[in-house]
Length: 213
View 1 (cartoon, rainbow, N blue to C red):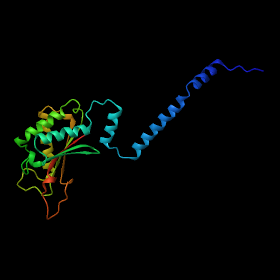
View 2 (tube, helix red, strand yellow; view 1 turned 90 degrees about the horizontal axis):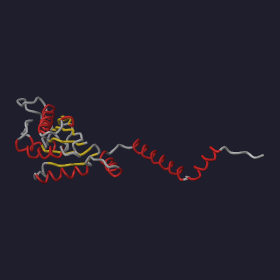
View 3 (cartoon, rainbow, N blue to C red; view 1 turned 45 degrees about the horizontal axis):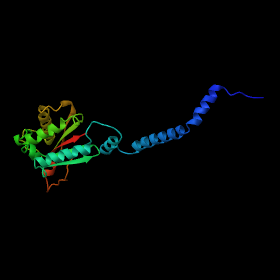
View 4 (cartoon, rainbow, N blue to C red; view 1 turned 90 degrees about the vertical axis):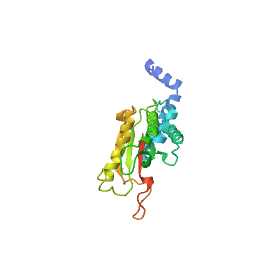
């Protein structure tokens, strides 16, 4: 007795045998997907490294943070601010630090006129097409010395927040879009150098930082 195999089944079998590599390829893709899902599930995402990977695999029009770091280093050199500014790639983004004496007088939140040229250069970078889509958190930081009772601000909290807001207002006046900014005041809660009762008021701790994401 002869059993006739339906033509549809024969056609399906023939296609499977003609392209055996598809099975191995689909298994490989599935394993790669599982690997990346596991990788992100068990580790903290480093934004800088993630962007470098995405830069390799895609045509992202946003300037990578490691290239943006170089732009800010050029800004620092152009204004001779090597001792007063620094740039650091962090897992959260590009951190740009200004010592407060570049921008403000002691206990004040009004920008010094001499800070305008460097802030103009900063605004020009943020307005560039391949940078303009990034978010910027502007952070005010102080040392541990309390504000004088006669000062304009009741505590370092108000002073640090007012300073970050002043920087944002100036950048907006230079046509940087407002919705990219977040203003934060940390007072003396995030010291770069620990302070003690015998050693307070360190310049390194009085700063304004921009965290570019």
